Image (cartoon, rainbow, N blue to C red):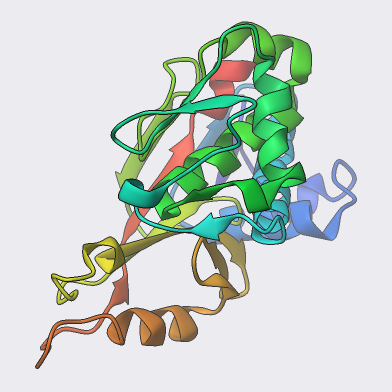
Length: 242
């Protein structure tokens, strides 16, 4: 349910505030859950929906960028903007604009390769840029570092257990019986679009059954447990940017 200024608000009460089908679909889902989504003002809700839409936009763009999937051992960036560290992470070069460098991944995707958790970080940073603008982004993320789940303190990320999935959430498919020779397929981190559609780097935009079938082909001999969608949700702290 949605609560604004301590008052429960029904999705239909917000129909005049939001015109896009994407926003209205998110609001409808929020209203259908027992989970309370609390906002001080309608502007807080509007900003979260704007950010969520930008997460999905960034995921679609990264999916079509040509960036390759690989493990940390073989990851590489465009050397014009990033230094590759020994652990496979990418560190922004000195005197480089963070916004220019992060958008270069979309512009010159074929010059990059990384695994799925780094892809999620890239999506969230690009969505942050779209949501707050290049000037503020460049001020906040002067030494941008892309590696696994390591986020800058100025992009606070929270995880919670639950199944109140909303478009723009980061979700996680677990593969407990993964092949030890391919440990990078122990899980797939995805952006949820709604309507059983997910973006995962290395698998593309697919439905849950397709992703599970893919992961099940990456299991050890004689597996006992199927891959599955976890009841875990990862979200930015949207209000941190207000």
